[in-house]
Length: 218
Image (tube, rainbow, N blue to C red; front, side, top):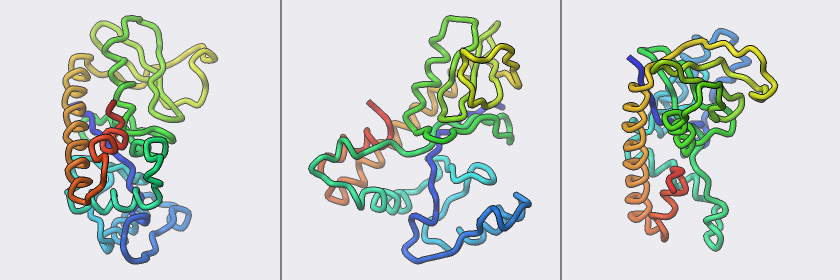
């Protein structure tokens, strides 16, 4: 079954109150061994979460409880100059993860953020049958719609205009995608509301505005 997940990137070393050494991937060429060592180290930290897949710091926003969310917010806001907070506040790194059963098919890439859900919504509204960009960061992917299906390419660092023969590597039902988008949109709103409530308890001014900026909700 196809599922969309709204995920943010949480490098665990940034958030614990004590110093811990996390394993470097270069020290463990086997991804399975690295992941075991990584989870073992993370389990000793104050923050508790599970990455969506190996070699990833992406975490489903629905799995982050309020205690750990407050730790994340406190850390992210430490260096903010409140005189001009709107220009400094950016959305969480991350974005939409597409899974089919247990297999991760698309994850957000470098420079993607949680506000990129708007890029996925463009798929539903797109009326063309040609290949189009799906911005998830870089590298990006391309998609096209055909007979109620949405086909996706592999990741690419090349501009769409420069590609000649794009190959689809998998497809999903457009109706399923639309239904899943409605779910993750609500998850994002709920996440924004949780952030706003925590910021208010922390006596942070402009909590509602900040929560919108951090979640990419306009």
